[in-house]
Length: 183
Ligand code: 5GP
Ligand code: MG
Ligand code: MG
Image 1 (cartoon, rainbow, N blue to C red):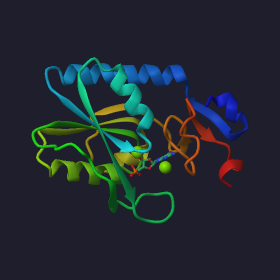
Image 2 (tube, rainbow, N blue to C red):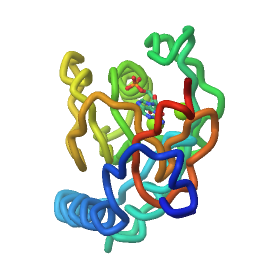
Image 3 (tube, protein in one colour):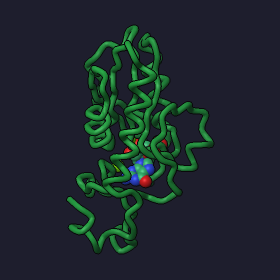
Image 4 (cartoon, protein in one colour):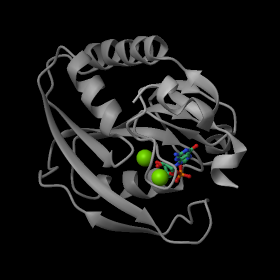
């Protein structure tokens, strides 16, 4: 789905197809360089990471293993509470593995902070994080995100895996919604 297919729903296009491709290519090159000679296990956080996982892994030159996890944050409203429940766990054993968590966006950072601690307790050789997007609030959390695609303003974004009410994940750009959609 392209921006023109939902043109009335979008307030603005934050990142175009070309900009996303460029960011993902840069991330892949950095990761390839840092993990040279190592086997990487990419852990995608469902569902938001579906696009970044597909594109990042394809842009990498290294052999990788791919696995997915689904988690949900307890709590009401749109802010995550930091109390996390595992909906789908990994299939891979993390012992002595180089784990790279693949995220769509770090907002409060609470989900990721919990996830990083959880994965570290499974005996991996290393756990790092790559995220396509980061919001300013994430800076208030003590979490080390090694690879950041783009810092964005504190706005709710959709597309490229990110949803509003489970919709817009298949939009191929990143945009902000027009108020009439969520009001
Ligand atoms: P955090 O725990 O860092 O606050 O965010 C957890 C999850 O909330 C993210 O992985 C993402 O799925 C969702 N989220 C955070 N900000 C946004 C946003 O601007 N748009 C959408 N669609 N989801 C978001
Ligand atoms: Mg996510
Ligand atoms: Mg969502």
